[in-house]
Amino acid sequence: MAINDDQPLPDLAALKAEHRRLDERIAALSAEPGSDQLERARLKKRKLRLKDQIAQIADSNIPDIIA
Image (cartoon, rainbow, N blue to C red):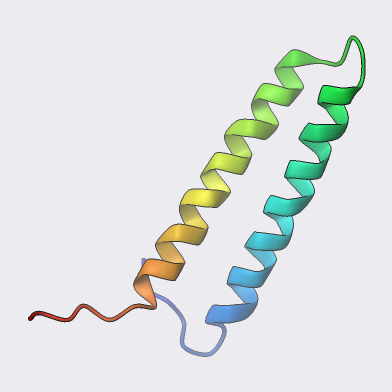
């Protein structure tokens, strides 16, 4: 995945913000008795995909240095 040099950080910041919102929503669902387990599982999967995207973007910003 190539990073657009014009906007690498806003994309990363947006992904991190969405990750935090999902984390808050998952916590809220966990606190509710009788909450929808399927919805919580879907949110957790989405959160993991976001985490992978964030890591991929962060890794691509670090240059490969061959020692």
